[in-house]
Length: 210
Length: 210
Image (tube, rainbow over all chains, first blue to last red):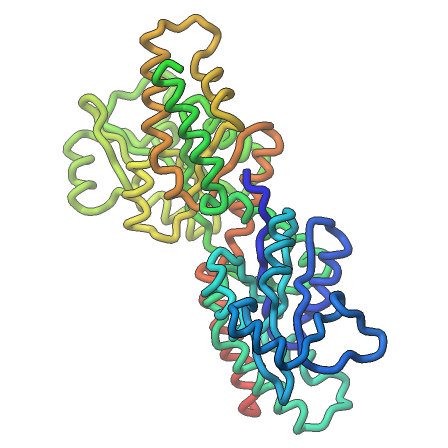
């Protein structure tokens, strides 16, 4: 069976609890690694190089873009954010399942480079639940709430492009379900080509009297 | 989330323990139904109409072929064997996950009609294990053993066409794993189109101030 880890891309509506899900998954099971992003923004107090982010100069970041060393990247305001390929590759090779929490544009970029990446979209149980989470405790201005709702509409456009959806109705259950989806995907045929070939060759050898 | 059952096609090497796996899965979990085949062969003592098989005349069977009422069929010696579509459809509609134990030729026929069917190939842990199971207790003639090995070589050709492989190394664990694979596949995006559309419409309605 395949020992290489699976790169799992996790997306979902803002406010749906993706971050908590990923954190709990990392805490509960030990076969996961979190992808560390690269950025050109300044380091903030409490952040650590190679843990919070890989902090790069704009020149270094643009070199990585030119050399195809990023799985995906985007520019927000004046800073780049992206996913260094090598770090993910090293973790996968060591057998870790790597979690990458990004938006759909990033997912599409990654899938072009690593079509075998597993993609999961986190869903609210109902649209009403999502609305309540976005509105929050009535401490936000209408402007903020409207911007969040518009964003949610945008985020809802590409859900069918993901392999799986996961309804986050109960944190503990959803963490286990997320783990199980990733775990079962290790049994996908296309991730086990070598094992299948070995069995086939073995059976063939026996039938030929070896 | 989707309530419709999943048609799961289970194939695998002869002697790998598919039948036992399916039986134990049915005994342990109550959301499964076994597809009942139709056949033109005579009923044998102890068999029951609609339980062991649907027993049909050759004319009735050929009518079903002509009317596209079978998911797949084949002729062995002088008898037809096949999978009636309506029975499977009724079980799926009632929410049962339907198990269908067939060979690769049948799988290919079913996938043409129901591309959403889930396909799982049961594997031995090693080629050596399979050889031991095929050789049995040294009570078989060389001729029988050679025929079995030749058949295994044939059976090994299309494994990559299946969605998942399941290594049957421990019956109890494999039964649970089989259940989990089928269970997780209920979260596949393409099986939840209506739910996704409902959430999208709901979010859109809120953002438009409804």
